[in-house]
Image: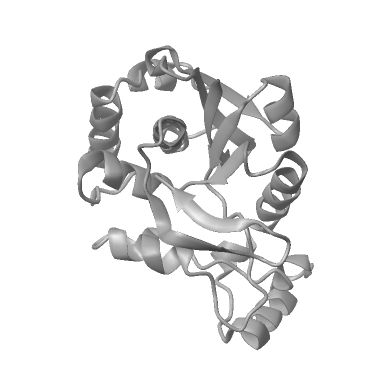
Length: 229
């Protein structure tokens, strides 16, 4: 059973990959095509740090609220997810307007910047199925790993050290993964986030995971809206 944790990066995607039961041998991969990577690498189960499943309104997903409740002091790391209709709009103004009409909230520009990756994940999971691809969130994974949210900022030296220590403690070779980083293509925090998602994928495979919310709903195309940690 080949597992992966996948995070977005400016050049595309970064993944930390390992076979079930062998997290210490985890390796790094960088790629541009999500579905192609899943098939080339024969990934059986991946957790990806992007929303899977989009509501049609009038209420938003309950996933984000469940995660924020698990992350006191770190809830700002959970971004709002657009409605499915907004996801089809080509401009920020149009997408934000549609989202406001459907969900009563305009979109942050930070969310709109993720639209190409949101569309790619949506297409990939509908092609591959949720048996192979599930939604994760690195800060939720680190909180589950730590027993409480990791409040240090992941892009600062202390945050990097805190997260590396947690990953090393659960058997992931954080230092080796960072040494394998292609220069200029991916940030250290993206690699550590992907490693945390791999840890959660292993927990899901072993049926030791937590699901947010505990009783997920489905969207209009049948995708379960939940985060695995």
